[in-house]
Image 1 (cartoon, rainbow, N blue to C red):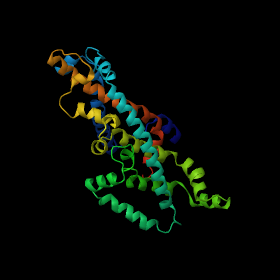
Image 2 (image 1 turned 180 degrees about the vertical axis):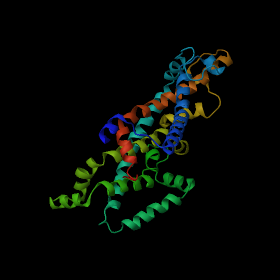
Image 3 (image 1 turned 120 degrees about the vertical axis):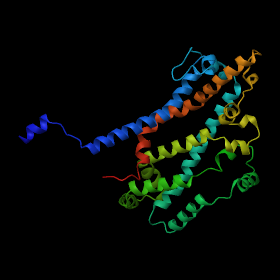
Length: 304
């Protein structure tokens, strides 16, 4: 009788569970719309007719398919200069960030590292108290890094928050017994880190690479402060002139002198196109690290 009821019957939820599911689904739908709608709008606007975008006729689906803004953007050589510089800053900066973060987090995760509590306290202190912009600028200036590649990657070489997250991962997922076995086999600390810890830490490395990489890709303030040569500007500096300022110098895109109103309408579409051009690399990379990202960010979750 019990087996038959289990096979034919359904598990009935209480009204508390039903209310919770409704509220949860509603919140998730609202968050989905809030996050996806701006991206969908920008994407559709970049492929829409400038007149439709200007007149507010485009709300989610491209109106009057048009790729003129992308043709105009691709003719602007500084976009490619910015792309090149940003890729260099992102790759080099992320590699430096990962090396510094791992080299700081691994010793702090070792219980046999005597000064780890003192050093951890010093690191945490820097999270709440910093020198400020002017002292940092003076340090960069005295080191001779102004208007150089290193001014974009060295000042932010490590994030203490990411060090703490990485240290927690090492403590939670690398057992002490593994270290003891490696030492019995003759491995020193460096060999244990390179050949055992790092291969087992792919999730947290992927998460840190994504955090640091996106930060470098979207960074413009360091370039605004430390760089003077336009040939060294990252992509975001060129986008800043288009997105933050309310007008676009269309002459830099090589456009002819047409009516001012038509230029302004095209400028509006170019803004959306530039956002898509700048966001595509990050959107393409994320799916490949998503499985590691979910595992890495859940290291501190309650498991039951």
